[in-house]
Each structure stands twice: as structure tokens, then as C-alpha cells.
Image (cartoon, rainbow, N blue to C red; front, side, top):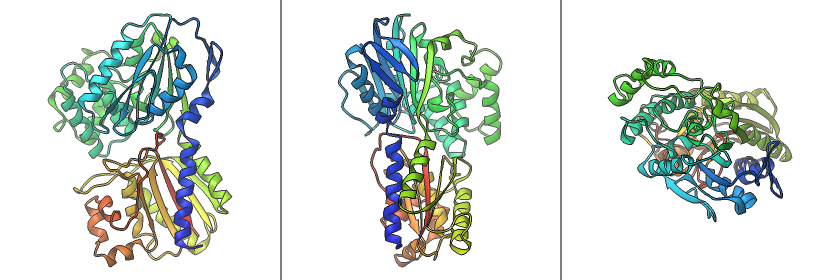
Length: 442
């Protein structure tokens, strides 16, 4: 089996994983309609009971999710609004669509969030709201607390990402400086009935973390925020307004996010319709069809990207040299979301960084290919979903005067892989269930 064949196969396996978490298919799986009865994950809603039905949401996949909902209950929709990342759009008939920036929030997302609140502020007990959330919802639905500007919140997001904080830690801070996250959107919608359909992009599918849990009770506190600031030494680098707000929260001068004891959650249903594990299972099925021996390591891999990459390189060598943990032809699969400690000034994302960090470890290995890409089609602030490399990548780079160590040290994976033609460019995939990492040994 040639390296060329392996590269083709690895893309086919990735595409199979994407098809498995298509939001339209996922919504059809969890949402059915029988005349005026709407059945969502086993719970029935009589549409005749509700005078009005709205749809709101935010995330990279929320446009295609909204399209699927329109196809099911479009005739009952009073209106609504979803906020998507720029370029992740599709035509909608009954709902308004706003494009905003991600991962750093912008004024368009801020205004869109205010418009969503206008819809929710006038709900009554006989109103039903379907909320559609996917990865990116936190950044696309920004509305900071009084006293904190959007620009200051942007600084917070940038500092948390660059210091290597996990998505859980980032969202803990964001929830406590937001008027909509951490269950506060459910508060705003009371006394209406809410159903949230959620595409998980977080390890373990914790409802309170995905899109910062706008319709989910939150057990994190201002004390958790202080621990995160201490851990990453952020007290002197975050805006004073944010530090002051969190300090007020510690003193009990700001309301905590609503907990599970709040009665508003008696009228709220949260349903995860697709996740990373579904993508990994589909990748494994596709690889088996192609004749590979397969091993799914985990859907919950986090930690520092380069450290995970070293493990992958070691597994590749072990398979090639000793036939362990599985014999060739082998396909090793994992998912999750790693973090990058940014020390250089280059361009890239965690998936490109992961593949770059394996280049030296798999150098000269025969018929060995490593692939990593975001399922949303975007890796960091780039137009690439990820990258692909093989045992000859380092040598090919040297032939065109690309010094591997220079690009690695500068966190510049994008500019390393671009001249090699090894960026994974998909455009928006309209789904988002974290990352997919693949290793093929022919």
C-alpha cells in the first residue's frame, strides 16, 4: 500500500466521520413530528398548546440546524434568530441569520445577542422556544455584564486561549462575565418553555460547558474563577473591569449563575444530538471496510498538543517495528481537543501543530501517514481544518529549504505545510464535534 493510497484513505475516513455527525441527520434522529405533536428525545410537545414558537441559537453549525428545524415545524414558527460564524451560512425561510466573528467576539455578535434577548424578554407560559447550540456559541453570543466592554471581553478570550487554558476553564470565566451564559439565557426566557438541541464540541459532553451552557444550570462559582486566575497568573494581565467584577462576585455583590435548584430548569429540556464519539465510531467502521485493523484510543484526549503528538509518533514506530498495539495495516483513531502553549508568532492551530509535532517522530517511516483536523473545517484563526504528514514530509520540507525546527519553535505550522500542499482545506463543514486524529500504517 503506497503513501498516496494511505493519504486518500485517510481523507475518506475523515469524511465518513463528518457524515456521521451531520446536524440535519442528527436533528431528524431526535426530533420527529406527528401532525401537531412534536416529539423531542421522547418528550412530547403539543403544538396546539403553544401560541407561539420561536427558534434562537448560536454556533458554527446553527444555520444547518435551523434549516432542519424549519423543515419540521416551519409552519408553526413565529420567528427567531441564529448567529453563525462568518461563512457558515445557508438559506433560511422563517428565521433571521446573522454572521459574526469567531473565536474573538465582535459587535455583530453582541447586537445579535441583544436581539435574541428581545425575543425572550416577552415570552409567556404558552410560548415554546427551540434553542440551537453548537461549538463556537460562546464567542458568537457575547453580551458582557455591565461595566465590562466587548473589547475587554475580547482581551479576556485572547489571554485565556494563549495561556493554554482548557475550554472548561475558558468557559468558567466567560460565564461569570456574561449576561446570557451559564444558564442566564434560561432565566431570561422564563416563564416560557425551552428545548435546547446541542451539538457537543467538549470532552465528555458536559452540558454546562458547551457554548458556556446558556440554558443549563451552572455549578461553577466566582471562587472557581479566582482559582483559574491564580493558576495562569492572570491577575495583572486581564482588564481591571473584569478583575473588579470577579472580585465583587467573591464578596457576594454579584449574582451567581443559576444552579440546578432554580425552578426555571423544570421548563427546560437539553438534548445532545451529536458528539465526538459518534464521529470516531464512524471513522472506525470506514477504516474496517478498507481492510485496516483499528484501535480507538479515546474521544476524550486533551492536554498539550505536542505531548499528544509524541505519543502518536511512538505508536507509529511501535506498529511499524513490532506490530503493537495492533498490526499493520493499522488505523489509530482518537478525538478530543488539545491545547497549544503559544510561544512563537507563527500561524496555525492545534491540529496543524499536532501534525507538525509528529513530523520528526515519524521521519523515514515507510507508508506512515498522520492526519489531524477539526470537524468544523477550521483550525485556529486559519482557513485550514488541519494538516497531513507522512514519513517523507521532513525530507520534502528540507528539499525546499523549510527548516523544521524553526517552524515548530515559532508555532508556524500553517506556513510549513502550505508550500508542501499538506494543509487540509475543507471550507465550512456545518458541523462541530471537536477534532479527529488519525494514524495509518500501511
